[in-house]
Length: 167
Image 1: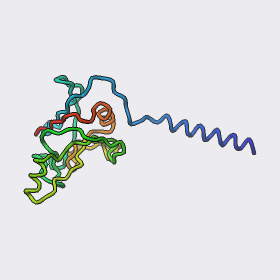
Image 2: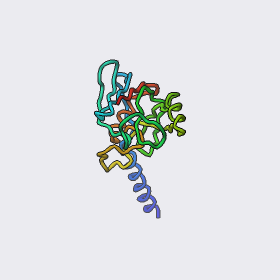
Image 3: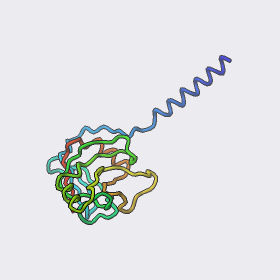
Image 4: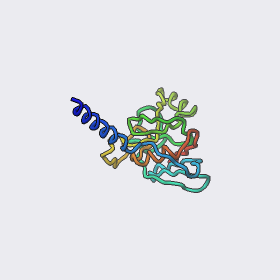
């Protein structure tokens, strides 16, 4: 009986050891501070900047109706304007995500004038299906990158970082 317990214990230890070797989605970043993010919607590009130097650039996906500024919840557009990274979600359905401070007071007024809600929950995030490569704009207004990229962005970008989203 003791031999069986010993074997079972050894198997459990090996199993737990294998679990801890899985790579973490949380990375460390020790480079220059990201002082701004610039998104060029038409080019589908996002740039992480330190002052005026580009630290990194990414190909992005946008809302499924990418032309123009977000008007109201559910329109499929990605907002345009100046915002800030205001929160982070380590348990996102989209791997990891960084919240964008949409809507601002102008966004709220614009949507209310149309009799609609401005919505919210606009993020820079990863993929919903990590094994499928997203080819087209598919979000409801967010900015999407692949999961490996959001891991790096999540580590590099701090709360309060300004983000300029340009047409």
